[in-house]
Length: 86
Image 1 (tube, rainbow, N blue to C red):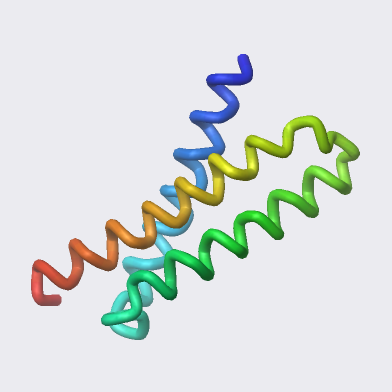
Image 2 (tube, rainbow, N blue to C red):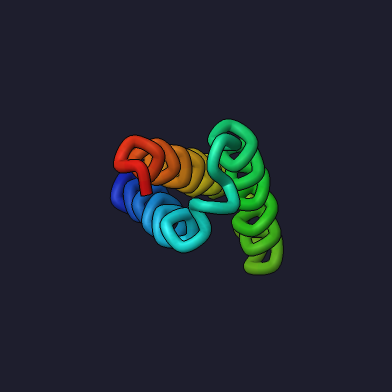
């Protein structure tokens, strides 16, 4: 179940930030690495605070999967939008 949970967090982070990046790619054009770092930090804060609120700090590694997934999703969408010349 923990591997399934980690996969879910990774995919949820990637999907969330892929959609957000596609909607605002024109603002972030040329700042792929900066966007990926901001997304990573935001996911760490968001999921970390959520884990603290529900009092389950033993699952801290799940927030890493969400952060990495979100960061990679945002970076991938920015690179794809640049290559298509949109």
